[in-house]
Amino acid sequence: MNKRGRNQTEPAKSAISIQDVADEAHVSIATVSRVLNNPEVVSAATAAKVREVIQRLGYVPNPFAQGLITRASRVLCLALPDIHGEFYSGLIRGADAKAHELGYHLLVSSEARGGPGATRAERSTGLALGLIDGLAIMITEPGDQAWTTAAESGTPVVLIDMEAQRPGVDCVLVDNAVGAAEATRHLLAGTPAASVFFVGGASENFDTRARAEAFASEVGRAGVALPENQISYGTYNVEWGYTWMQERVKTGRAVGIGVLAGNDEIAMGIVQAAEDAGIRVPGQVRVVGFDDTRIASLLRPKLSSVRVPLQDVGAAAIAALAARLEDPQRPPSITRLATSLVVRESSGG
Image (cartoon, rainbow, N blue to C red; front, side, top):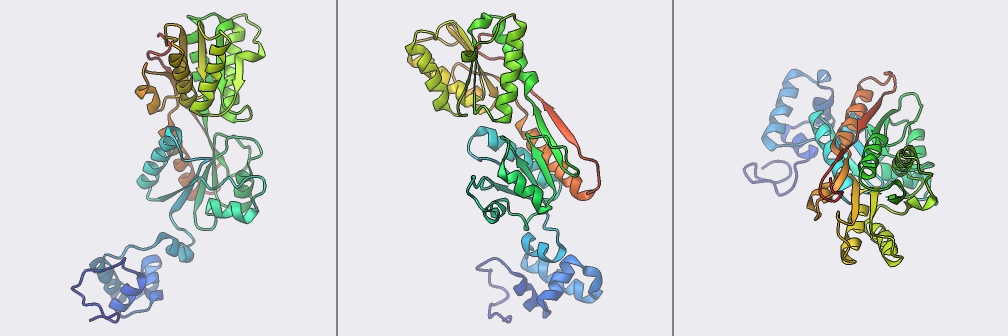
């Protein structure tokens, strides 16, 4: 029997702890920790004995506990405004794969947005500051308190979706303008400029703003002074797209238009509202989404959409963060990822 009264041949009923390893090797917890983190300060014989016990018991060190000693947890945090939906799951998949490839653990948080009334302590808890080696954070709107908290913490930071001219801060950006312009030209090729519309998310959202500006620029090139009602702002969800289209149906202004939606969910709502009203897509309404999530392929008719390389965005953020940790003094980097139109059935391409 070992010191904890468990027969050595019995299967463990719970996860093996560092205390179990210390008991089995007849050393202190501190010695086990030194073998794991600073083996050069432990005699070769003791280190070999501890490693044999670790292997035999199947002990897996807790990265957070290791970080208390080494000050390097090998844990990175990806902080997003939300984790619901295909857009964010794509980012997470790319970030997780890259973190695994580089030997890091990934912590994903959507707790970073404490709202205007949140205290600094509450925002710090959401970002797991103090437990992580670095933070990749998506900032979608000006004045985001999470960015302020992260910047003040001293933790290495990579910004997604926002460019900051700040020493030691790397940025990963999506070139929304290229794909939005391409999609607008595609719609203009078969629809009069006065009958094309942009239906986006919140007006202060960085992506919405870039996509709307590119849309307006292309319509302007077509020689049309863009009236305010050709650009509409709302929320990035199906309900907003449905509501927007439903209003046009009610006022008899739904047939013969082309719509660039701010994301695939808005586009889905527009298509559903058109079909509920007996309006054919793409025969009577042409629709293009944005992000090219799984929704685009699942929707019927299949949705034309501007492809955003979501997994590449997540991977690039983690790669930049790992590079910053390896060389804290390296010049700030800006990674720009291209977007491109994928034409399917909904736009009659």
